[in-house]
Structure formats: structure tokens, C-alpha cells
Length: 236
Image (cartoon, rainbow, N blue to C red; front, side, top):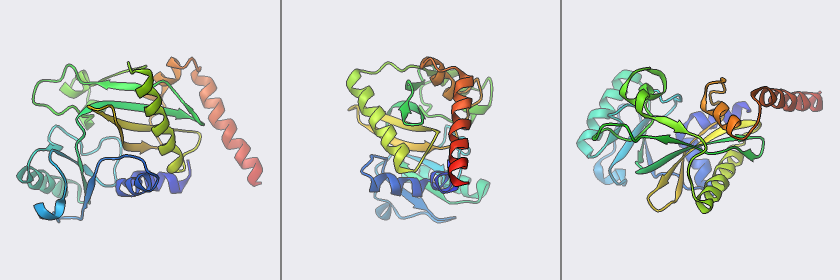
């Protein structure tokens, strides 16, 4: 992917602006400047909210405390994030529902993966945290397992694939990327992130989607390299 795509996808507010301008549903949000929080009236969002660092990926800064249910919780957790990471935040309306990862290769949508939260203890928000991705034997790591392919009706599957591909193209992605989606209780997909640089190691989720599609990992690597080589030859 190009530097412009990588930059736009890293800054969550820019991603949302591009998605919204292309008619793609994404949770309503508010960008919090460093060490500044809006008043409840200015916020204009419905609780619960999820707080994220504005310019991070890999779930850095995401924890069991990221979903806040009141303005007081918002103030408390924002203060912690400001002091710990020293950067802007984004607050967005939390979509209660299923979390889907949609891997895309070229213009082909691979089998959709779902993060299963069934084993999480009551009271913990059903989200993908930093611990869930990187800290083995943590509660989140043990209880946020992907299932690929996800069990979806034909109608919802078609809807999710369409919005994922539309988001992929709106952000100018090419070759490969992953679109993360929350599916609300009414079956409406909301794009929560476009990741133009997802983990593609052989044991990662993207590789699992390749396997479910019957695409050998070696062929995937060859395809990406071949596409890049073709662009290089054209530019020369």
C-alpha cells in the first residue's frame, strides 16, 4: 500500500472522514485534543463509548477499561490515556454486536473471520484488546478466538463483503489489507478500522483466511511480489 494510504489509515479521524464521504457506515465519533475533553453537551455521542488512541494500531491502548459507560468514566480513562501515551484520542459510539475481520487480496474478499467472545467473564467488554492480541495466557488472549469462516447468512455475508471492499477502495488500498467491522443487532455493518498493513505471518488471521479460501500461503506471497514488480516495471 502507498504511504498516503498507510498515513490515512493510521489516523483514525482521517479514516472516518474518508469512509463517511463515501457513504460507508462507521460509528459516530469525537476527536479529543491532547489533554482536552468536550463538555457533555459538546460531545453529542451516546454512551457507551470506546476510547482509542488517535494514531496507533495493533490495539495499543485498548484494554478492558476502554469502553466507558458514563461521562465520569470518560474523564477518568481519558486522563489515564493522555498521561500514559501523550497523544490525541478518539471517542466513538460503541457498537454492541459481532466483530468481523475481512481480509482482501487484490479485489477478492477472502472468507470472513469472526472474533468469538463467548468465554469472556461477565462484565468485560467484548472487544479485541492489546492483551488479547499479544499477551499469551491473559484472559482476553484465551477468550477472544477467531473463527474462519464466520457463520453468516448469505444476505449478511454479501452485505459485509460489499462494504469491506468499498472501504478498501475508498482508502486507496491495493494488493492486500484487512477491514474490521462491527455487525450490530440489526445486522448492519459498521467499519471500525481499515488496516492496510495487517499481520501476514503464517500463523496470523490473514493467513487463516487464505487457508479457508484454498490459497497456498506461498502463492499469496508470490502474488503480492508479482503485483509490486509489475508496477515497478510500468513506472520505469
